[in-house]
Amino acid sequence: MKKTLAMLLAVVMVLGMFAACGSAPAETKAPAETKADAPAETKADAPTETQASAEPDNIVIMAPPVTGSYLENLKTWAADFNAMYPHLTVEIIETSWDEHNGKLSTMAQAGEAPDIAEISSGAIGTYVEMGVAIDIAQYMEQGRLDDYDANALDYMSLEGTVYGLPLYLTIQSIGANKTLMEELGIDVQKIQNEGWTYEEFLDVIKTGTTDSRFGFVFANSGVTASDMLNIFGAGVGLSNNFTPDLKYALTSENMLIFFQAVEEMIKSGYMPNYGVEAGQRMVMCQTGKAMIFGKAMPLFEANFKKNNAALEANDGTAVENSLPMDYAFLPVPTMAGCAESCYGTVDGLVALRNKDTTDEHLKNVLLFMDYICSGDRIAACMNELYLDPVCQSGRDALVLEEGRDANNLATAGRCIGMVQAPPAGVTAEMNAIALQIRDEQIIPKFQLLLAGEATAQEVYDHICEAAYAAFGQDNCVSGKLG
Image (cartoon, rainbow, N blue to C red; front, side, top):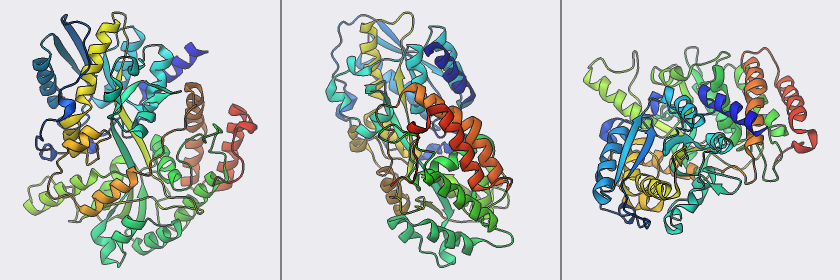
């Protein structure tokens, strides 16, 4: 069973499913000028892990362009690390986002995994089932592990074992043409500070809808339909696939409430009744064809600023037919009285075992992995991604670039605090089944709902039937989640 599951998860990895921001598209790359100024050295700049010996050792890391300058920075950090530990050298395997997951899976299955690799937290189960993931707590000092936020570490854990260090916690929500919203008399700052209900959201997108403009668009074409479920699901109490008592959550009435909301927005004409490609949704906002769009991240503030500068310079690099506008990062509206929440995912680095790995080598691997996940290294990354570090040494080293929108910054910080990590006890097998239901049952039916070819009730009933068959009705939530 485990071998079969490992193969299934590997296939999922190759296809890049459920990678969200972890397998970040080009739009998540910040321009080079957003790199942080070099802050003072921190405790993490001089790792304290005791080495068993000073024997020469080579550490191999495989990474995609986490930020626009990450791979170049990684070379600098590797050289700095070697200067601190002359017996330790670092080899860097650079990958693109498109090839990274497939290449990593292939190498791991062949017993040739790199020592360190970037992955999305949702993929950890793949490497646990392969038998190549490492319990990192065995190879680094507890004091260094304590530097990282517990919530972020929970994402890098499975069944109580920590398999990696977090790089960043990405929050995904909705964004907007702030300039237009304020022109229409909408109190953007109040929404950012206090949140809003679905009913308030509906009134706003109604106000923003005209014959030539949608009040709201969401990238929901093909597999990106799952993004809307994840992001708006957080606003209706569905932050995770499973409840704390490990029941499958998407059979709750909350799921029906979400589908009914989507049905209402489409029938009202406030959002398109067709699939919107991922690359279209922000362009539709920038060209005045949509007021609010999703998915969105804090980083998009940089995209809007860059486009405004290009428009002012008239240098031909701005989005075609775009308009000057300010960007607002907004929280997801809440539904049915549910508490405000935010969808987030964690990307991090994991240590992997290959056919030549020894325990002494793993101590060196974790020494370097901790080094590049903390201190001024991670602070520089987070400045590029417009995110807060998820370790104390990173927060201590962070020097924010000038010109950041204070309200967007505060909203992002508030939303990060609302992200709920997956409950403890969820197994790789449970995650694999939930993923299969999502891909084979939920997404196809949700697309029918978006096209007006199925009702909210029909889609919900179908999902319940599929989930009951997979998990058993007793292991699925019935009724409404609080």
